[in-house]
Amino acid sequence: MQITVVGAGVTGLSTALALEERGHTVRIVAAGTDEATTSAVAGACWFPYRAGPPDRVAVWAADTRRWLDAQIADRDAGVVPLTGYEITPEVNNADGSAPPPPWWAAHISVSREPAPVTGAPLAWRYASAGIEPARFLPWLIGRLRATIERRPVTALADEPGDLVVNCTGLAARELAGDPAIS
Image (cartoon, rainbow, N blue to C red; front, side, top):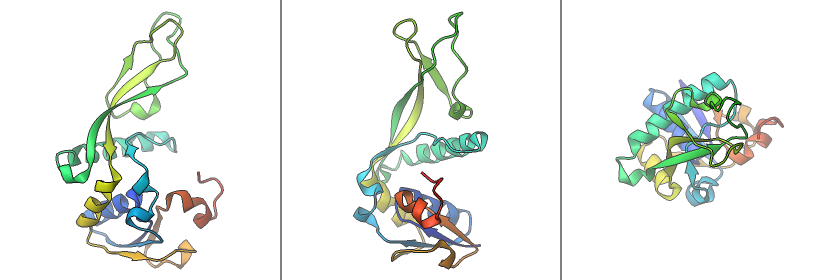
């Protein structure tokens, strides 16, 4: 399959690499690369994005976390282990028991942190991965067969390929013409 990935930040380059690893021919088009991407100035940590359908997102997120965990051993990748916490508005049930784990924890290990006082919100602890974009972006580029064609994209429909993947981040809403994209 011939696939065009639009965007060369962490999401675009990671998507392009995953597609290449699965045997697809990929071309990457982006208005900005390297330091001219939002990714270059925005550190990141792994956490499932609230999107739908939640059961599939939880699976995809767990797969991504396993992939990131595998990159930790390569110091050049700029991926490091982190411990994450999500504080929820939920409190313990009246009998003192905790509510069920959050939707995103369906395929990963989480633990409930005890509330410091009765009635305090719950915190869920989980293993995460931090990404240092200044190292991760060049690491991704070094693994890709595709080169990045640097030019603005004004219409996704004008891009060639059997599939066009919009990984433009902050520009995705305007490029897709979809106000529901946030």
